[in-house]
Image 1: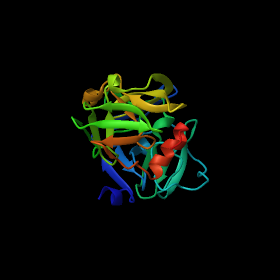
Image 2: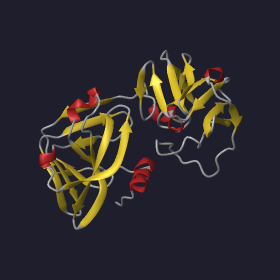
Image 3: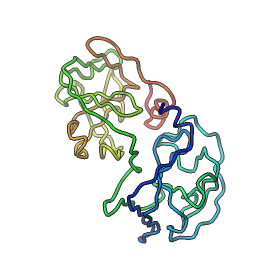
Image 4: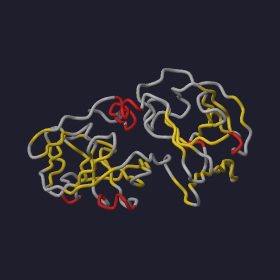
Amino acid sequence: MLADARTRLRHEPTERRVRADLGGATVVDSTRAVLVWEPRRVVPSYAVPGDDIRAELVAAPAADGDVPGVLHPGIPFRVHTARGEPVTIGDRAGAGFRLDDLAGYVVLDFGAFDAWYEEDERIFGHPRDPFHRFDVRQTSRQVRVELGGEVVAETTRARLLFETGLMTRFYLPREDVRVALAPHPRRTYCPYKGRASYWSAEIAGRRHGGIGWSYEQPLPDAAPIAGLVAFWDELVDVYVDGELRERPGGPIAEAMRREFGLQA
């Protein structure tokens, strides 16, 4: 079971050459990289032998505070669930972590470096998980989105996105959205789908910032959802063929609400 696997430290070798830049120089260059999942961390990190890091490694203080139950992408790298020692790389404090159970290797904070490359192609967001996938399927079932009793969108042309470990997302044609959408400044990047643009809307007399998103120019695998709009199922009511779906809960849903400043 995937849920059980996430409670353990896991690592997987990769044959890809991995590089990372810092301050205009390549400080990581390795053909011996491994993907590492610390216990309860959702997305993987790269780890490389210390010999493949062209910068000084200095022990750094451990992070203080409680460790959450799920280490989703919004939880900083400095929070660790495995045994080891944080290290400073160059001038980036805590950008590395020496694992006790992976001798000689240093796990790297993706966000602490200026640019990452697999072979000669730049990558964004975080390393792709080789066990993660998504599928998009078109459906003629009636999908209706409501909030506060107001119909936000209604369509029989939705595309359903099924993604490993995540709830189903409903992507709707923009012409089937009944509320006016205004651009929101937030931008995020998904290594599987591409760069997301966010939307705000006035619904039931209240402005909801960042309540929807779209991929205007998605990566090739996500082409079927280009330009379609999805709404946070955690915050709206979704009906499929007239039946109300239960809103997703749990720590990831709560983290999304806090991160976006949204309320249920």
